[in-house]
Image 1: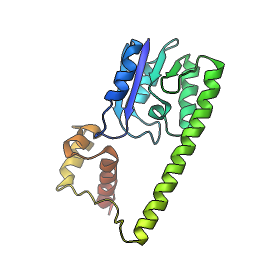
Image 2 (image 1 turned 180 degrees about the vertical axis):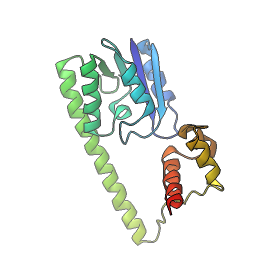
Image 3 (image 1 turned 90 degrees about the vertical axis):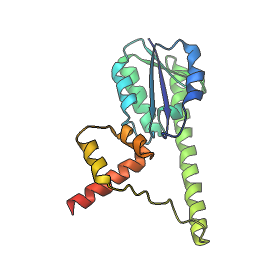
Image 4 (image 1 turned 45 degrees about the vertical axis):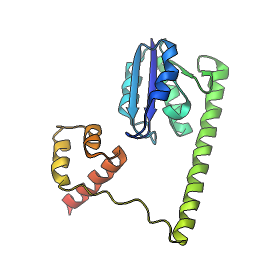
Length: 188
């Protein structure tokens, strides 16, 4: 079976570019999600890993869609290998069914992680300079009036996090932060 995994980091982003690139691969099953790849705790990713069987091929546009860290990428690939699943990345033109493909995946994963670390370091440096100059105040704090009602709807499983974030027009990470803050106030 040909399986596609498509991911963008935020609700506001559009996955159309990835979908169009993968359509030529005769995809039988699609897994799409709008969530950060900061870890592998992603619903569609986990569902795809559980679903895929020996002989299946998972297609991605590029490795950054699957994982942001080399460790996470290698962990996912190890799960695929254990189950006999192959991975094909279109951008990197790598097929993990070959020894060369396996080697290249490890190298590209390390390079992606290095690039991400450099980007974050430059971002921190830029923010520090902007703060010194009084030009950076940080993000505006998100306030949701009567968040308690939204919180209880989520806790009673009336809505999922994704549904609630969409309803409130905020990102999932922002919703996670609001939930944590709300839970702290409940404990105090």
